[in-house]
Image (cartoon, rainbow, N blue to C red; front, side):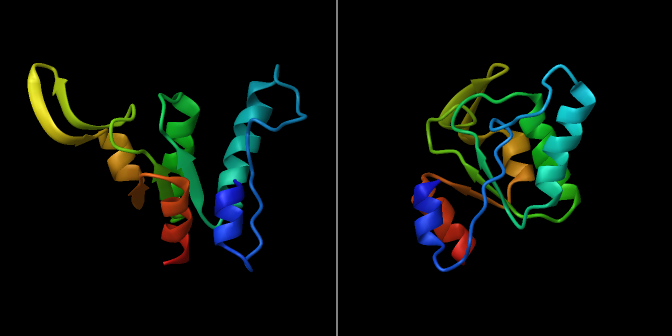
Length: 121
């Protein structure tokens, strides 16, 4: 967060992190509504997809895309969703990016510095 905040000065940056919460985690409708509300209130969505993520992240990326909110994905080469080479259902694929990360992201970057630079372009 600090790298992105510093790179975007003087623009104010508010991070809407669904992991920082005070709501009732036993209420799935509340969680669903809050997470999608955070996306819809955003000017841009930064998605950290360096590691395997759950269903919620994919839904949030789709929600952003459906609402024309730019998505910048942090997915360095050789991370979970991006590989220089992968064997996929007995087919060797070069320069693989997971189809959902590829199609739901406007930009895919290797680092937080690159992520911040992508927003300033």
